[in-house]
Structures are given as structure tokens and as C-alpha cells.
Length: 375
Image 1 (cartoon, rainbow, N blue to C red):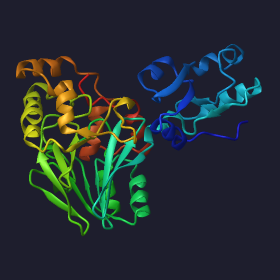
Image 2: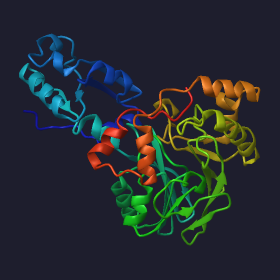
Image 3: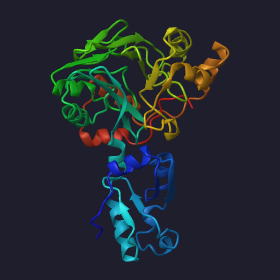
């Protein structure tokens, strides 16, 4: 039995650094087609484990022996069995992905966006899900924005940077993943902020994140300022950090724009989405670096691994910001909605505090790609 396993940390570095990798995925074809590990220079082969249970002779003829082969499955069990079979067939270059796609879905990769006075702003990339969280650190204090449920990552990162988490904030009520903001605030004995227009059904106490809210982080007075920007949800609120970084939540992405339908309000909210993108954001400093809460593909990554572009650049390059009329915008948005995220209503209710699924159920609810953008 193989004793060497590849971790999600190993895979993440290959993605960020755009290194090559050969991936043998033994999940069912439909699961593989819907969602897989994306890499700029990755090679793929998908063979369901059911086809190799009895033997790997046919598969062995199709696999390279001159490069490492990473084997992935749902949770790591079938991958290990596949590796054992291939080693028995003479392969010494096969390695299972520890924890499988479940572990990949939960991996967070921190990348520094920029230094700021007394600290830095960091982007936490959930490579297997396309989610982006942020931590602003200055002079020993931190604010965490749009945290995922893997809150231990944020706690450890802050500890490693000798920073105390002072605030956690969600730019909106999330529907594609379970927020860790409220639990992180509870475990760090700090304040949790949420837009009040998204909080009409929540079952817990919170601080209002609304137009004009201004929070200082550290002695350097690095400010996080809120701007009301509805459209993805009725409460969606953007944040400007240090007058240089625009955290857009799920309103504006690098290659697309947010969808307005995850609460069943597409026709009602499409006008709000248009006004935010074509009026509110137009009044902002166009030199702001847009940092979204999601991304769709790795080609949105910059060379340093970050995901972000200047607002002025997006007004030139993003098709969703260049629709000639409001009627055409409405048609584009309402006719190009992708399938809704897995378990999106149950995720919304969990983030409201109405449901309390256990950790295993939370994992299952989140499995699959994010679908927060217009196609």
C-alpha cells in the first residue's frame, strides 16, 4: 500500500504557481464534468472506479509512466484503492489525494494582496469552490470579510500574524456556501456585521453593516467603509478598505456580474443590480482595486495568484458593465441564469440561523462549483 499521499496544500501550490499535473479522477463522469480540480497546465483522465474495481490492466495502458499521477475521488478512499491496484501493476508514480474532493472543497489558500500601513490585506482563495474571503490586518488587529465555515484557518492565520480579530463582516447573506462569520465572531469574542436588509429573517443578534458604517482596524486607522450596493441580494453592501480596495461581494466579479435570483427575486432585483453597476460604482474612484467574493476560473488569477483588477479596467473589459440599455441588461441577466447552487435555500436558512446541520451535512450541502455569476 502506498504510504505517500498528496495534500490539498500540494495541489494548491501547483494551481497558484501554474505548474503542470496529471490528474486521474475516479469519480463518476457526471461528477467529474460538473466539478473538478482546475489547473492552468493540468492533464486529466476520468475513469470511474466502478470500471477498475476488478482490474487496472486496460487503464494501465493509457497512463503515463514518466510523470507523477495524482488520483482523486470523493473522499480519498477509492483513490487509495486505485493507487494500490496501479502499484500492483508496476506503477511507482501514483499518489492519492488525501481527503479527496471533499478536502479540496474546504482548502483555503491565503495570498497577500498588498501591504498597507501597519500590516497587509490578504485574500483567502477557496480554490475548490471559487469563494474569496479577506483579512485586513493593521497594528495587531484584524477584520475578516466573507469568512467561510473553515474558521480555524482564519484564527490560525491571525495568530501567526500576531493579530487579534476585532470584526467579522459578511457583505450579504450568502446562498452558495455557509458563512463562518457569525461563529468566528463568537469564538473570538468580537462583533459580527451583516447588512440589515438581508437580516430580516435571522434568528441571532448582529451589528448593522450599512451605508456609512466605518470600522477602524489597528492604530493606523485603516478604515473599512460600507457602501450600499443591492442587486445580488437586497442588502448587498460593498466595502472600501484604506481608500484603495473595493470589496464587491457577489455584485461584481472580474469576468462577470452577480445574479439577482437566489432569493427568487430576479425580476425585482435586476434594476437594483443595474443601478449599482451603472450608477453607484461609476461614482467611485476608478483606481480602486476590485476584490470580489467569488471567481469563475483560474484565468482570472493574476501572476501573483491574487484575483482582482482596477475598477476602470473592468469597465473596459467586463461585458456585464457594457450593455447599451437597461432593457438589454434585464434580458441578458434574466435569460442567462445558470443552475442555482446546490442546496441554496437550505444554505440561506443555515446562514439565517433557522437550520443547524451537522458538519458532515454542511460539507455535502456545499459540494460542487459556485454559481453566483451570470453565465
